[in-house]
Image (tube, rainbow, N blue to C red; front, side, top):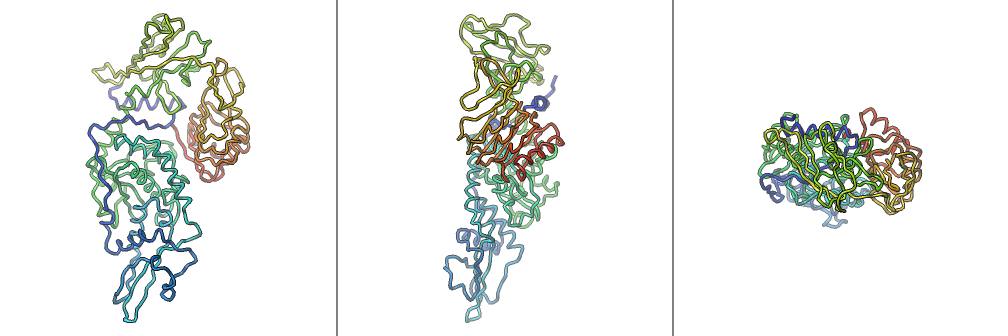
Length: 579
């Protein structure tokens, strides 16, 4: 018996882990108990700058579309040869030459970068000054931006916008602000790896591009990526910092909170913690994250982490108790759940309620106290005896064909053993349809049966496919088979392939399976079976390919990475997940 819903959530999570086919998923069913309002973006950052910092900030803002080539050097002698519009006047008519302090230059540049996350060219450019003394002995100072190399970063900016659009298109923009924030947080956690780079260096790892496109970022890159996604979701936010690290400030309702995403990613454990997600300023200070310079003037963060924990628990419960997140799964002979259809030669079969996670399902019977099925009078199925019913000792329902009609609709009600309702538990209802499917292998893929219950995916016929999902099981001629291998050259002709999701039972990827002209963006395995890779299996991988590798331990993960680097992913990005 569970004495709290919180314990049930943790227990259910352990069921997902034990299933060995779990994927991270952020459903969108959380509903805030009170309306959350979002203020329009303000000039809080600019208002917090001192006068010299404001001038430098405004210079960056004006000049980032007027950046000069790297080989240009402007002096007082040749300035008149250049267009006046390519300069920003810092001051005129001064009695003496006034230079700007290194601190003002540093923090004003940060303010510009944090306010303009898409402007990579400006972030990578160098701010230069020209001092001119006139005939009256008065000084003027003019600023200009120049490249530090040949790159104009237009391609990087385009790639960043594409990456952001792909993420935002998978977020429910009508959801509550907390849900949208949590989704943005999860997207970054699952797509970015930490790089220890000085945050004031002119390095792409210090940009949102580094985080969302190359998957490598400093704390500043993380913060910029999170800020950019929050902007797209209309959630007010700012970026905070000390001398060496950045983190985010987010407004939910009337309260401000602070989040340090890199610290929430437990790399060697392959898990995520929320101890620095939406906490107060005082809590961040306890983590040795104390604001400096203009960040000290930004508004205080008084939101309580205890409130965040309540929202996270409520979010979990809303997901867990929503019928739309469940389906009726057919229980395979090995007690796995990989399908919702039956084959025509299955006269009697077992079914269970399953939690839907992307394209996978997890049997939740271990955390239930009751489960019943209702069949209509004209059902195509029947329950033959009391022994067919669900009990803790018989954690599935046995159904047979031979009902009174042709109706394939099924209603299920199951009860969580969560201690609620005076011990009666919480009941969830959903409806499903139980159909026959003797051949789930569509025209997209070609399979070859390799054993009594195994098959190999040998070819992809859809050569223009961008997002590739290798299923866990496939039904061929009325029989279900586990997909255990991706054959040689299977996706070689798929020139536009970007993402690959590998099914839970795949153990081997064949020679040159992904070796075409495409450049893979992301590869993820759904289960923990993946073990063997033939020569050039992932030749299409490049430096910006992210492998999100699920493994039963960090040691196993490191072995898989070592093998992957030998078959095409030599300089790719790798991230460990234990769930």
